[in-house]
Image (cartoon, rainbow, N blue to C red):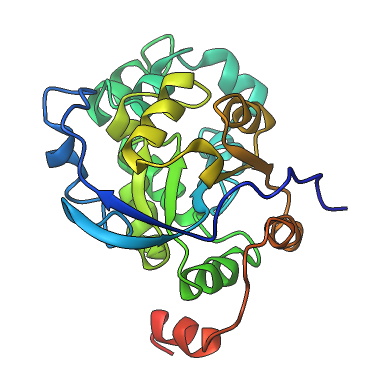
Length: 262
């Protein structure tokens, strides 16, 4: 059954002026420099006036668009159960890695509480192999893009998001705009949501946020953003349709084939 959807509160289009923010200090490098790799046509060049189709769609990545290898593959890589892994790993190392506070070498050094060594490249290979689109989601993204919606990643993930991009080419459908390792913050930190809204230069109710974790969805709602919990692609399509989001198949099959070189 589709989730209860709040009343439609955004206009279908909005004339805006988009410009890159001047101040985001999640690291010594300027935000504009860090964003150069990540921002595509969805966040137009400075001072460009355009008509924006609303709502803006903000997608979590792991277990919303992409299967998360952490729960399925990483314990097996170490020959442990999930409980054993959680008991012996450093309590904050992965979080710090996701926020961009430590690099791969530091993660390798402190990943386990007892300082034991492990094959970092082997772990990365295991993780990369485990990335795949969740059933039905890629087709959904293709249709949303084809219908002119602005779509951004809004996700907690480290620099390894580049491995996801290399394998799945997610930037064919959305921009890797709001990644915790770039922003220096993680959901459900309220400051992360407020920075996203500030960057997008629109009202919170003009955005729809989709995440598999309810605590992140609730944090979005607290920030005034429309929040949907992801369960599967079919239910998400129903929920988005109830918000008035269009799913017209404008040559979607041809575009999907072009994306995959078929």
